[in-house]
Image 1 (cartoon, rainbow, N blue to C red):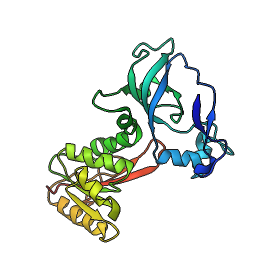
Image 2: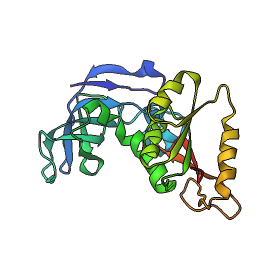
Image 3: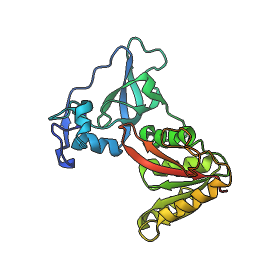
Image 4: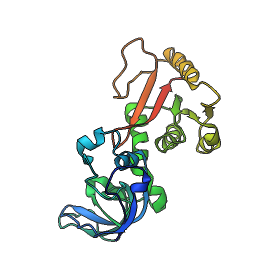
Length: 256
């Protein structure tokens, strides 16, 4: 099969298109025929081997242990292991797999889900890491409620663009922070207000939100989702990706 592989750490120049063996499906795994795959910041970390902590925790000290990059994909189940009962060949799925930048990839059954019929393969492939990170930050850590104001820093990025749309779906008033060239994009995905950080100090906007939350009884929280100590009026969340890296910052207040 064709795949994007790398045998050393570095820039995108280390990536090569090569013919490699199709992966074998394990007893409790499935083999996917990849129709679409997406890239996120974690792929860059594993490609470059930076920060070095990634190498220490298992990606390989001198060279990548896993040659094929990519984790987020959507496709059809090609084959299933003997212990797999919930999926069968032909099922359309999306999720996290091993080696998404290839014609075929293997995945654990607890890391994939049926693809919604109203999403294309390309759309579904963007969801697993970035979409889940935004959802967890807003729903689980932020506990965003209708009528709250949410400030999303990095609103045009992978996690941030999902966060804007999810916060709007939760009924929040959304302010997105981005650069000049992304202002129209952030507005188009639903942001009520957009701050161009190259022209305006978005920290001032964040402070204004913070002061308004104090009088409205908003429960502050840290990135862990734990309540802040009394006297700390702001609510902020730093979304963590599958690679453990920070991907977006989200702050909420009680201001309608």
